[in-house]
Image 1 (cartoon, rainbow, N blue to C red):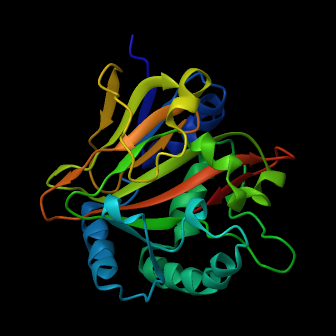
Image 2 (cartoon, rainbow, N blue to C red):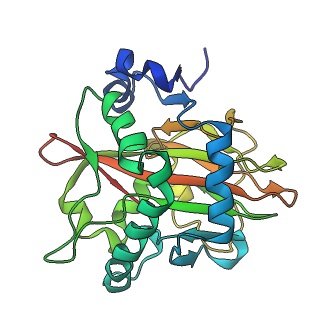
Amino acid sequence: MTFLRTVSLDASEAAAHGTALSRLRADDEQAVVVRNVFSAEVCAAIVADLEANRPGFPATSFPAPFRSSFYGMNLNLADPSLRAYFEMVPSFSRSLAALMAPYGGFEARVLRLLSALDGGRPYGAPPGPGSAGSYMVTTFRSHREGGYIPPHFDNEQRIRPSYEHLETLIDGDIFSFVLTLSRAEQGGMLEVFDAKSEAWSARFQNRDRPVPKPDVAAFARHAFDVEPGTIVLLRSGRFLHHVSPVIGTTRRWTACSFMAESRERDRVHCWG
């Protein structure tokens, strides 16, 4: 039996899988793959707009060795004051709306899909502190040749200073989605390892700096080599995972959000 129990479905079948994400959080399954969230043609059009940044997204970067960048700002990398983060939110939100308007909107096409997979529970960006507005609901990630993300557990984020406010709003493990918009020629795949956070988290903390990577060769792994328009939902807080290095000149474009239940358990908060 594989260590990563995975449910695979077409986006048109979401209504018949209304317990998929509650089962994911309960560890009855560890990944959900949803195909045809967007067609290949729509993904190609979105990527063309992203490559030229026609919607005018604000841009930030991963640490330089990772050869990757964001539209929007990753909360993990934000200054703990969050001043620059929340100053960027209005511009990012306008650009996201402009990008997705021809395709029904991000909320309608992605967040409502997640809600359908979770028994109708609302999905959306959490409120920021005071009058700051909401968090960014997602980010877009561009990985160029050689770009990668090292092995990590997403639950590590919760101890970072930039999560001090968000930590008062969320409960339980972090999980996440990755929406593939374009694949690398080779590599650039989400790979999940047979290593759980309770046994291994201390060995992999704070690996988002240019230090030697831990040796993961001994772990069994599952690689998600999916078509554009596919969403992979993962128990990323508890399972070690990485993005393997991109090979070739074609950029890997994805939209990604981290997620966790609200403290009241009445909704799921999503952030970039």
